[in-house]
Length: 444
Image 1 (cartoon, rainbow, N blue to C red):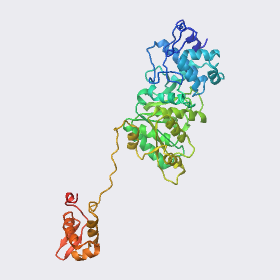
Image 2 (cartoon, rainbow, N blue to C red):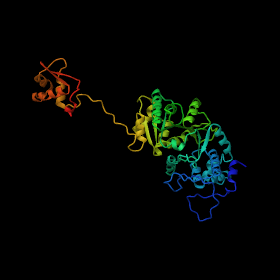
Image 3 (cartoon, rainbow, N blue to C red):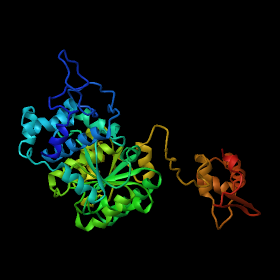
């Protein structure tokens, strides 16, 4: 008997299917299953509550964890039909019905090919071997609020927005705390020196100010953002499109180890799952959902970074883009996001924090242009000043002719210019000065 079957057939967990605690029923309810968290799906109520955690025994929680581990392997994420089914009947019952082949057709469609593969216990052991664990919605550290966006998008019919069944997490960080203040930084793999520098700087500044930097551990912008966060001694999360025990890309094996020490490496995919292009696109929804906003630093016209930006926008997250040289193919995607109005322009980490933070918090000081001594002069005073010579003293009559300002106004303006060190009166006439040191209040 498998680990899942054993968990389902203990005396306190009868094999009859239970009904969702959020629905009423006129029939007699079966004996209770292990109490599990209910996240939102289109058919479930309580849209104002991100989760419904209840106190469970360790044995019950183990059974739920085994069930969710089994379901993660038998269905390729995001599997929204399975996620909805689990939210309705609970993970333990869902696992039992999937194995028996009696789940609803939409669920069987995504599980039938793998439903006989029961490696839940083996996956948990393999994960523990690399310092990983399985996080489930019933755990206190589950980021219920950030993932509400996935449920709301799914309720609108967005097919890719399924709520994760569970997450494999490598590292000691607390996922719930890490996602309280988080920003995603994504971009091109073939980053230029410009993009690599900015991603490192953004990662450093954001993490140094207490934000968690979320990215995908890819070459280029992702890796630079992670390194910047680590250099700042801050927190960072890498979301993978393969198992957490897979060092992908291989050149980032050491970086992934370091990320696990400073934060978390996450994946929906069981241990030993190889990377695949479609899996990276699927994981992008988790990067976008885990953060309050997504910053795109360099992206081609068609790229994974553009996909993450579109996903973030669909989830109601703030999308930000960093402009680059108009001649750079690596900035075309950023420029298109800005030109279409799908992203806000940012040029530094402070502007990112202002954009994604609470209203009135982390505001950026307005950039003030450098002032000149002549900025406070009116039109005629400025003309008088410009008519003066630095090398030759001029009479008021000469200044009037040169400036086109009436003589009486020239005579009124010259003492004022002298007060603010823009003119000097000598025995032979008036000369121009440019220092402008005295009498600033006089010009106001």
